[in-house]
Image (cartoon, rainbow, N blue to C red; front, side, top):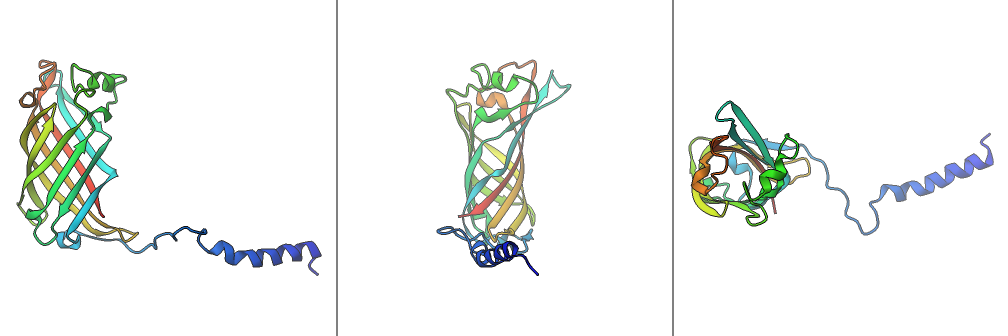
Length: 215
């Protein structure tokens, strides 16, 4: 025989169960999980405006160290931007990216703070770096070249980014996504970045990984 206290507890649990099964009052239920659909086909990401997912964005810079012994590697942690995507004709797409130079990181203790100073990036006076595309060309089924204006250290000049479509489609929450990998190289002196010319290499190599979500 079930004891009276235990029976009462079981009855209360049965009454309360339906309430716990409902979403919180006034709150939207979580998005349903569905199998992700990822493709190398650019048309799988529909035409529209996409916002950069800052949690899945990385801009990494490599620059020669000690006159050429090795490379120093730096990452910029704060990146934002938008993509006006044309899934039917990617050459009509446009991208606009902003990087916060003050978000630079280094595995050398204290070096990132030095780089933010007026000898190098001078981030208090030059708080943003931007890339605005001016031309998109296809070079293969999933590759292309993106020409655009890079504004860095207060100077604006064109650069070319070799880009690759990594994936297009819907994620597990049915969000429409398109993601890219890119590389570019520029001569830093062209942007007036001439500090420590003997100790720091003349060129900057960029590796860029960006994921955009449709708005």
